[in-house]
Image (cartoon, rainbow, N blue to C red; front, side, top):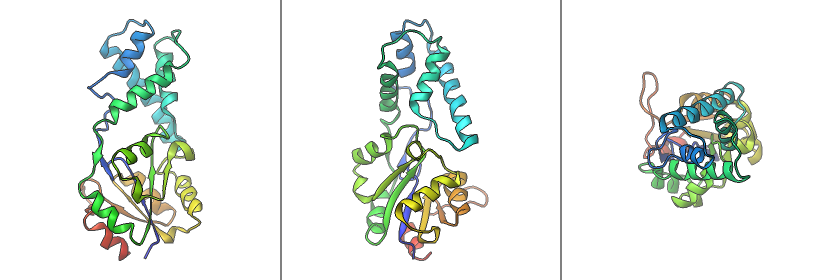
Length: 227
């Protein structure tokens, strides 16, 4: 039986809206207005999406994570690099993440699953994220943090899933081998093929697809113990 269980966060432990344009509050547009840049919502959305896509696609190709501050800075450049106060980019990131994460909620059955597994396993989170504080904050707010020994984020480790280096760094941090751990996630490339490439067993909890039958969180503890 494995001693350690690593969980993806978004889409695995929590439900969330992956859209990069939350409707409740348009932080990029408000940033542009504070900078006295005359843009409408559609143009601000297009520039924010472009900034995001440029940096995220580069990170995906290289395996090297990018930060929210880098995305915000690229958006500022696309606006024409208007004069702004020193803290304005950090404010944009803070306001954007606050509204983007407002609707994040625990996945169905996640507390029971974690309570069961943490009785005889070391649980940790391994998440791709552009902000180091986001996942730990959400774990605390959702009262899930007590179940986990460590939280590993791509922005802190420098590598994003599915690059093999992020999984190796996590295993090294615990002083274990791939045979001592399993990975649980909803993204086939990042959470299944990624950990499998370094020798870890992996359990898919995402949407059912051809050749990809998911495991429910209710059945996961038994399957982990039987692996």
